Length: 415
Image 1 (cartoon, rainbow, N blue to C red):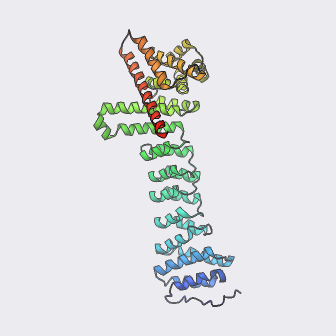
Image 2: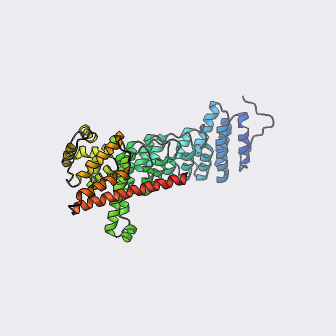
Image 3: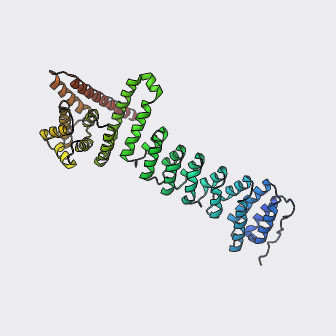
C-alpha cells in the first residue's frame, strides 16, 4: 500500500467543494499516484458541481494525467474518468479537456480522437495542435467539416496523400488554398487534377497553383486558359476597352503567356501540351510564328510532328540540319501557308547558327533580321496576308525590345 506524504490531507469531495481541492489533489499526484479511489470520488463530485468547477476539474485531471508517472491501474482509472468527461453536457468542460490534452504526445488517443468529432471550437483545438491524431482520423472530418475546420486540417504539420485527396475532392476553396501552400502536404498529380477541375476559376488558387514547381504543363496550360477566360469576361475590361478590343487583348495575352510557358519546358513538356492546345484551337499560325521567332524550337518540333504526322526524330533532323526543301515540305504537310513559310525557314536557320556558335543574337536581333528580309521579299507584292505577317513580326520585335529594356533597367537598379 502506498504511504501518503507527510502533511497530505484528503480533499473534501462532498457537497460543493472549492475546485482548489481538486487542484491540490492533482499537485500530490506525482508523489502519491492517482488512485482509483480518488477517481471514484471525483466522478461522484462532478455530478453536483457547477460548470465552472467541472471545467477546472477536467483541466486539472487531464494535466495530472499527463504530468504524473502512473502505474497501469492508475492510468486505466484516469483514462476512464477522462473518457466519461467526453459525455459532459457542457461544451466548456469538453473545451477545457481539449485544451489540456491537445499539445501532448502522451494524451490518450481514444479521447483526443473523440474530441476531433466534437463541435467546431473544440475540434479546432486538437486538430491544430495535437501530435496524437493520425491523418486517417481526419479524413472523414475533412469531408464533412465547415471550411474553417477544413482549413485547420489542411494546414497541419503533416498531411498524408490520403488526407490531401479528401481535401482536394471535398474541401472548400480556402481549405484547398491552405493545402496547396502547405509544403508538408503530399499533394499528388490526382489531387492537382481535382483541384484544377474544381477551382480553375478561383483567382487566388490559380496563383498558388502556378507557383508550384511540380505543376504539370497540361494543368498549367488549363489554368492559363481559365485566367484568360476570366479576364475576357470581366465587365470592367469589356466596358472600358469594348468587346472586340477586350477579345483581342485576351487572345494576344494568351499567346504571349503560352510562349512564356513554352520557354520554361523541356521537349517532353512541350510535347505533352500539343494535343490539349490542338483540342482548344490554340495551335494557330500566329502562335507558331511567335514561338519560332523566340527560338522555341522544341515546341515547334512537337507541333510539326503532330500536325504533319511525322516522327519527332525525323522532324528534329530536318530542323537541325540545313534541309530547306525538306523543311518546306514539312511545313506544307503541317498546313502552314506558303506566304508564312519563309518566316519559319529564316528563323530556324538563324537559331541554328546561334546554336552552333556562328551567330551571337537574341530574340530582338533574330526578329529584326527576319522582319527586314520579309520586307524586302514582299516589297513588290503587297497584300493582306503579307501585311498581317509583317505586322506580327513588328509586334514581336517591339515586344523583344521592351523586354530587353526592362531587363536592362532592372540590372541598372540592382547595380
